[in-house]
Length: 222
Image 1 (cartoon, rainbow, N blue to C red):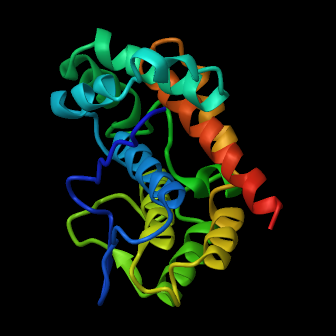
Image 2 (spheres, helix red, strand yellow):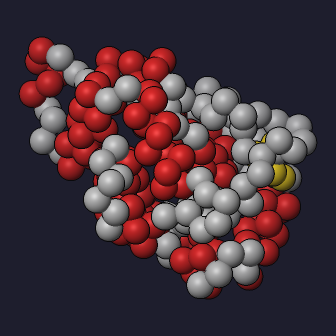
């Protein structure tokens, strides 16, 4: 990957009572926050054409393109290839078909389902308790529960780049990630990979899996 894409969710999934996500921090941490934001955006709603164009434009050219053998760079290139070759409508159709449903969707994006076997179970309560300690709550316009992958990635984005260092710090990142994301993200990615029709979101799942694996390895080294 070259310059990270800043793609905040059009309708933020989390609100804080006093502080916002800032731009102060080490470049590598801000890049992590941006990638969490992008993953949150892609699982919250299908990308519009502007975002797809930004993803395509992020692919390094010339000499920068020589350093693309890293696993994260490879999966990023797959996402960019999907963004380049498929329209926003195709992304929207795939998103609606597989993630949105009156009944049970083809793929459930909520952690409680993978950690407890059902929606709205104890893992959701635990997440809400953690968010309350951070002064975070779900935005009023959001219909998804707080254990949705988009909401959890937005929380991580805040814990990395938020202005309140008492909350946005490495310790809270590690605890929140290990408790509420790490136990189930692999199963989510497996569920996406198991559906052949998810041609566009399989690269997104690969990006999610690779990035979160790197996050886990980094936290283990603390």
